[in-house]
Length: 335
Image (cartoon, rainbow, N blue to C red; front, side):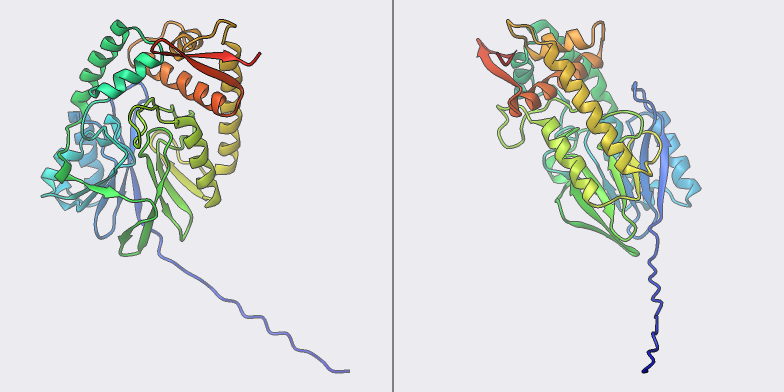
């Protein structure tokens, strides 16, 4: 009887781990410290910057120093999104680093102007049912927040493109457009070990707020933030990430568990929103005040953002109806 000799060959694959250094910076905001990420490779790159405060700037310099670098060594500054706690120091760091390249997605606006400086933003709040004095109060509040970030002129930054790669000596980070929290939010994937830097798209302890924003394609319409966010979460899931670095809090080692927890939380909140709609109908502002009574300052804007996002999603899924009453959107349960 013939004999067979089976030979097994062991192949070993190796790759250089990208040197990703988290640096925690203080912020003056309710969310607490923000995580920024130093890619300690050539070209030296900082992902997010923290707010424009002395405390954040000092903490960043200390973090860079511990890694053996100075601000002047930075060659590239990349923004996951353009909220003040993530982009505030970008302009001053660019200047100190002798015109380091700054990269941000075209759909972001916060690096150019404050959140409610544009007429289209205030028009969306009016359509959501906010009275004029409330809109003006929010505008003034965000004028105060704006001091935590400097504005960029168009020629001072470059565009992040979905699917492009940020190249380093040990490999590359894939740019993944993950809209939802903001229209231009981006995550960055190290494909070799499936590590993701996700900004505020993925946070371990809280579900990111879908911020009310104009649609980048048609600014007269509201960006469908929650529907886009669900698509972004599902897209990140396809990469089977082993480690996710978020913009706040601890890293995530079990994305699948977090993904399912997010879905349950979103479904539960949507059910609550629908139940709040009376037979006579309600605006997003009405629902926000029912969901979050007594909130103040920035939380009032976040409350109406969340209400509008859930109402938009429920309406797109055929669970409720919306009609215009004068200049306001009024939502009603199905009869």
